[in-house]
Amino acid sequence: MPEGPEIRRAADRIAKVLVNQPIAAAEFIVPSLQPFEKRINGSVVNRIDTRGKAMLTRFDNGLTLYSHNQLYGRWFVTKRGRLPRTNRSLRVALHTAAHSALLYSATEVDVLTESQLQHHPFLRRIGPDILDTELTADLISARLDEARFRRRSVGGLYLDQSFLAGLGNYLRTEILYRARVNPRSRPVDLDKAAHRRLARETLAISKRSYRTGGVTLSRERARILKSSGASFENYRFWAFGRRGLPCYVCGDRITRLNIAGRRLYLCPGCQPPA
Ligand SMILES: [Zn+2]
Image 1: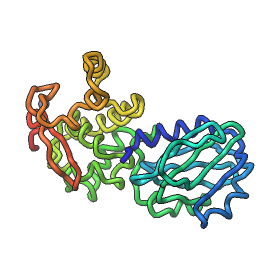
Image 2 (image 1 turned 180 degrees about the vertical axis):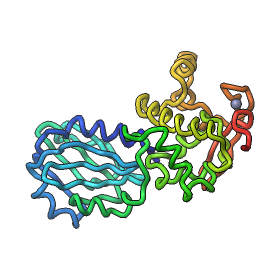
Image 3 (image 1 turned 90 degrees about the vertical axis):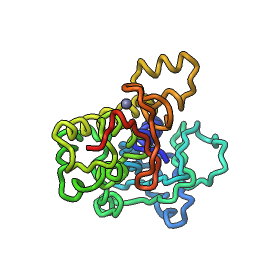
Image 4 (image 1 turned 180 degrees about the horizontal axis):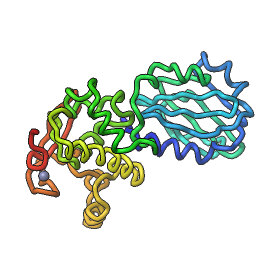
């Protein structure tokens, strides 16, 4: 499933063709949303926000298209009138004079007013977005200290959207590895320095992945691996997917375990139990 950085990049691609352009035609294939077609036609997209894995397309008439792609949903951007090659089923199409933004197979699509948005069950439940420019290391540290989070394993916490929205499986492995924190540790077991590393790496790894299109490994290491012929999957990560391979920092073998039902990779040398 795409994580925060991938959703934000998809939002950027859509924003590029939709923002400040009047919608020439809106098509909602979801029957319950068809009454909105008329109101969306002729409106202008002000911006596209993301909240974790949800995307919010904001129209100038106060309405917002809420979409959450879950496993199968996907947005495509095309020149108007062209359809992408896909077996998925179309749910929403927003056409401008020149382009189309097409949403396929998303299971959760809705059109909401500002007040419905405020009360939306998913949006109410999730924490701050990892790519929100107002999220700081201090705010993340404070969150790690909150009573509802501090006695849970960070391995579980770092998949929980109510802790921070947009975290997912590869980000969890990469953040904990770079922060040198064992996934079974709880915030309450960690000293101040570890809290600070965790908070700092949460921001750094998320932003880096957004900027690079999913590469969290340092630029220099990625460049060397790429020029020696490594595939994209093999030059992306510090630890994720590298079971049995030597840690880039200490040389120990990366191991794999399951936490909260998903695979996680760690270096026993760099991430000893607290
Ligand atoms: Zn190591």
